[in-house]
Amino acid sequence: VKEFGKNHFRLFTNDMREVVSRQSRIANDLHRALENQEFSIYYQPQVSLASGRIVGVEALLRWNHPQLGMISPGEFIPIAETTGSILQIGKYVLQAACEQNKAWQETGLPELRVAVNISALQFSQPNFYEEVEKVLHSTRLAPHLLEFVLTERLLQESKGAIETMNDLKRLGVHLSIDDFGTGFSSLRYLRLLPVCTLKIDQHFTGAIGSDPKDASLVKTIIQLAHDLGMSVTAEGVETQQQEEFLRHHLCDYAQGYYFSKPVPPKEITQLFSKQLEY
Ligand code: C2E
Ligand code: CA
Ligand code: CA
Image (cartoon, rainbow, N blue to C red; front, side):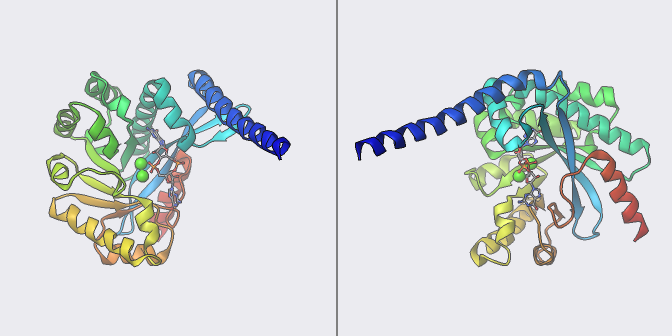
């Protein structure tokens, strides 16, 4: 029994060691990933439920590690946040997404808003606003074609967040709250935010058709957003039933595998040419 216990313990620590060494490897390799051009950006369409047309795209980062293969942003972004490399990475995503959207405009696509996820550390940099102005200036992208997706956590952690949000909004940039319903911002606080759109977390969207209580929360969030003069985007829409429910309850926009998974930029152009054939 003692033997077994010992081995068991050893197994456990080996697993732990593996997790820790993968994390420190990722933390380490993140520094060079940018220079080595290991990142790319995929874009996921956002559809207007009233018209069925693509009105925007969300930029989602992809990392193809030379040895470890594709690593999910869900794994490396939190690590990049603790090491600080998210600052360089975030700058890269912002610049690349604006350039890409300008390029789409120049090839004659209809106006399209590009949504960029911003992490708390990046948003709380004193020069964040200037950085945004610079990127918009250098890419000549109209501010209303850029959207920042912020988390509820970010708003709680970053001092002066509301002030920065007001400045960005004055500049004409669109602001959204990500994963709405999973954080703990009070409703009174929400009322003070200069936010244009609430994004319903995919957990709630996924409950449509299976969990009536969570599905009724979806209705409540849509109503709440509209009462506050905001629009709503549902994330993680995977079925026709979910699409119908959301449209029926006047949700404005939807995003999810039902419409398209995140794709490389040239496939966005192809999706538009298909749209024209309808
Ligand atoms: P998120 O912002 O909530 O992005 C949505 C995630 O859901 C994406 O995962 C997307 O691929 C996935 N998804 C989209 N449609 C569906 C669907 O119908 N069903 C399901 N089950 N999933 C769907 P992804 O690309 O792995 O990104 C994970 C997270 O990493 C993102 O969650 C975001 O928080 C973060 N992230 C990605 N790119 C960036 C970035 O450039 N900067 C920052 N700060 N965070 C990023
Ligand atoms: Ca997001
Ligand atoms: Ca989300």
